[in-house]
Length: 128
View 1 (tube, rainbow, N blue to C red):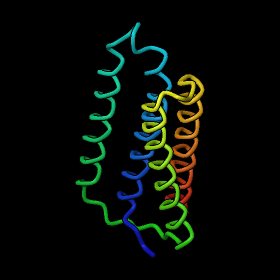
View 2 (view 1 turned 180 degrees about the horizontal axis):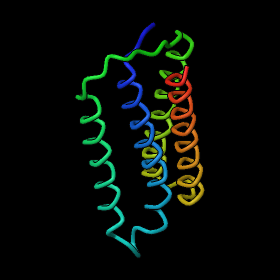
View 3 (view 1 turned 90 degrees about the vertical axis):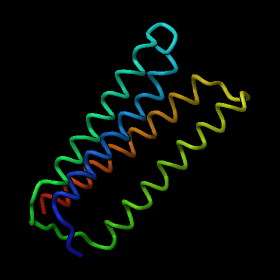
């Protein structure tokens, strides 16, 4: 299947945002009380990536990349897995029965690894 290259670049940026969100899970647990401004920095980063992604997507670029059904399925399962882990973190954190330090570190690392693999996969698709 053919996909516009600019769509893949935007998807790489989306996975970068996911990486930042995963890091934010860890950072928020440790630095929220001592550095409350860190949340604003993360919001500015997320908005900047969003605006940059929109600008890149709006630029005229007709180059296409070939993506296989296996790669599409892998990306889909990575996104499902990412959001499942993120939602479970929110639910488990609100229950209060699990040590929050272990939960946030584990979930943050898993989210960052999923995002990192997504960036690598998208990059390999672009470079084909």
